[in-house]
Length: 50
Image 1 (cartoon, rainbow, N blue to C red):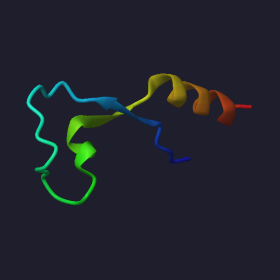
Image 2: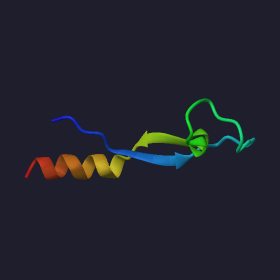
Image 3: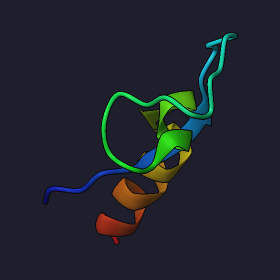
């Protein structure tokens, strides 16, 4: 079984320029990080064991 249990969390970046991005059109992406959601991962594993 392969899955991703991801969540976006706000970045700790303090300086924000809404007009400049590192690429693409989703400028808000510059100010969030994608992390593993431990609760979602645990729930998925528990559901798979049933």
